[in-house]
Amino acid sequence: MIRAVIFDLDGVIVDTEPIWFETYSRVCHSYGVTFTEELDKLVKGRTNAYRQLTAVLGIPEKHAEFAEKSRKIYRSLFDRKAKLMPGAVALLKELKKNYSIAIATSANADRLEFNLEKFPRLRPLLSATVSANEVKNGKPAPDTFLLAAKKLSLEPRDCLVIEDAESGLEAAKSAGMKVIGLNPGHVTPQDLSKADRVISSLSEVNINSFR
Image 1 (tube, rainbow, N blue to C red):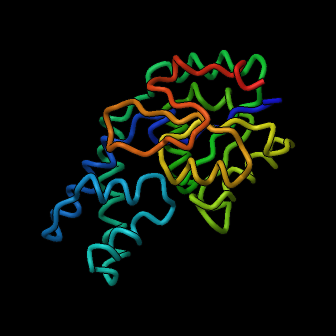
Image 2: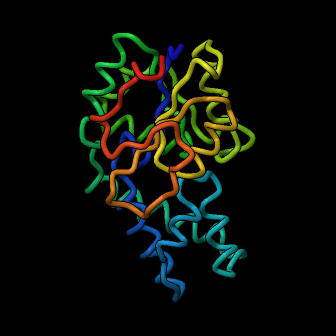
């Protein structure tokens, strides 16, 4: 029986995927390369995105520099452009009546915190959070979701995950959890076919069907 719902953060609770694409496009341009949808698909939802990108682009020695540029540009864009996904708060409020709620993200603790600071309505709705700093292996490894279940004092089989990235879907499945794949249609297409259900908006979430 489902007793908790665990949400990814980027692209599920907060609409940041267009911001990430613009960030990576700007940074890649500074190195004379084009950030494509294929590259976006490669790094979406992964903890080691900066390292993967610099490796693929053939500039692994620029990893730290690339990461710092990305963080500065992203934060500037986030402060001006970030918004909640449609229906996010309403869904969390409704779910909280019957389920524990957690966020389990590939973002580091600082980035998770400034998301919660920008959108303070989220914090009181959450029973637990997990950031990339808290696990040895980030998504697509299952560690992030397993720690969320542990913090909620639940077995993985009692948890349902809502994810928008292939890496997150793989992580949740490896953790032994049911998964709803969110495909809002305005970001780089992801293969969510292995999800237990695929939806196009948070308004379509139906937990009752998993009982």
